[in-house]
Image (tube, rainbow, N blue to C red):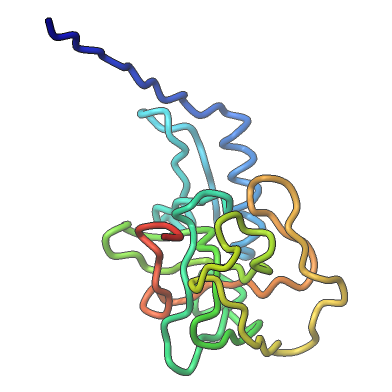
Length: 178
């Protein structure tokens, strides 16, 4: 006798409150840009930055991580729009980052917003060679407060190096922290 079990997995549709919270985070990381987030037809949160499709991730899941792939590191920029962007910090090669937002098509993104968190805050980083903190050089004055991860959604305060970069400069860990 054979028994077949069926499991139904139901995804919960996003709420308008979640879309508003995501929209507030997106507005914070894309100053000077027109941003919007709403619950889309499929129940997911659909966001735009300057009319470009953008996904905002929570820096808490296993697949939101990556590292700087450029040999000479990468300079983070203050704004999504390259014409209005100013350099904020320079991250060294192999610096561990959270990819907090992806603007453009997921197969061929236009820009990433990355945050360099202290790896001690990231589950899965203990004794993991992918999680490396490297020297960071601030452009201008370094914020006075230390970098602190707040909440569960990867939000931060203080001197966490963060900004927009070309996707070519980041290796995204598509297999997670394995």
